[in-house]
Length: 347
Image 1 (cartoon, rainbow, N blue to C red):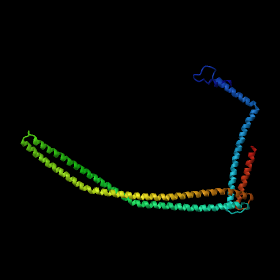
Image 2 (cartoon, rainbow, N blue to C red; image 1 turned 180 degrees about the horizontal axis):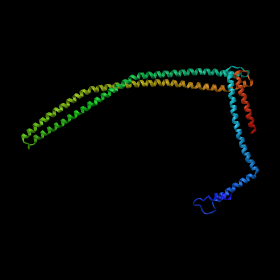
Image 3 (spheres, rainbow, N blue to C red; image 1 turned 30 degrees about the vertical axis):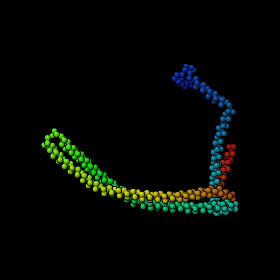
Image 4 (cartoon, helix red, strand yellow; image 1 turned 60 degrees about the vertical axis):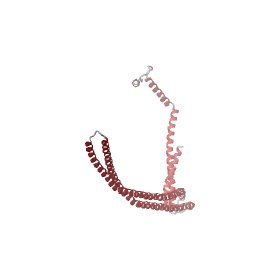
């Protein structure tokens, strides 16, 4: 044993940087000695052992007692549920018992209220269903009215795009002719200026002036024809563009009118939809109130069924439909008594 402990403690090397002192294994040796002393004291002290045993035994008893109490609560819940089922069965089968007349009257009154509320609920649900159907019909009607207008709008927009494309084509051609006209005008002005400068230049011989003038007049004539041709083309293009522009304006007017018509229909649709939704919402609130009232009636009936079931269980009225409930109650009561007896043993 000594050699075994020595081999264990010899393997315990001090951490790096530890100062020189007592061997590290002495600490573990002291711990083992302390534990050994504690065990010896425990073995020699009978009173200590008894108290430890009592502690663990008490904990075990408390655990078992708690488990039994949970089971008891479960059985009590079961017996309450069986009392309710027994009372409900006796009431539904109209089985009379002298002590239960007052309870039966209360249950009958609650049942009358329940039927009235159920009738009210059916009427409300029917009203809500009718309103939703009318709302859907209204939406369908508006969709049918908007459909041809939207189709016409799409057709008009397609024609408008085509018209705008043609207008742009004409504008590009007119712009090109304007450039031709302006270019010819600049060249014509340049030629006229050259002729004017030539007349004032005395260094140029007269014959040369006549030749240059003759060539310039030819250029001027050609440039004038070019200007006239460009101007004529511009006029022709403008005459063709004007009907397109008028058509575009008409299409835009029609599209604006269609958009206004659609907007008016959507506004009416929204207004009437909101009215229907508001009315449906009010009926939904009434429905919630009726459902809450039915829930309250159900809650009030439960304890009455329980009380009526207890009365029948005590009187044991003979009836085939009630025998099964009596048997269930007997079994549960026996189980409750057994559990209570076991719990008392742990007290």
